[in-house]
Length: 120
Image (cartoon, rainbow, N blue to C red; front, side, top):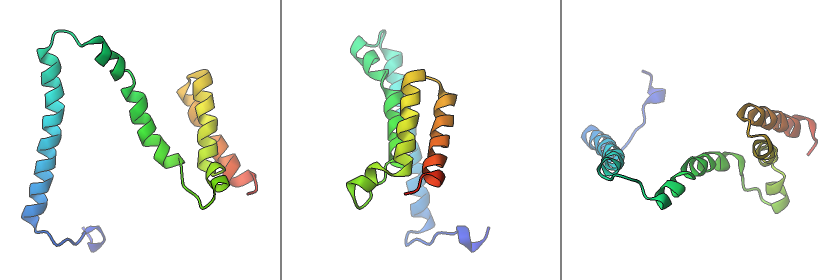
């Protein structure tokens, strides 16, 4: 390992490892709590089932939106950012076709076209 991968910190090794173990245990307990909870109840209430249907879309949006939306100095600059336009094209394709491959291909082609072909 070279020094390029070493991050200096004011905390000692014991503090860092304690934090890593504490976060790992907390993450495990959160996941275990849902497994335990759903193992103890016989049926999931319909309202919870309906709400859980939207979790994948919400997680996907939370992961994708920050990577395609960038705040520019002007509103026009923000709305005409290459990644936002490509994301809009991909969203339309996803909405109309429901095809993941077509969505990815159209999004990438749109990004390349907007970035390299369309003069800004």
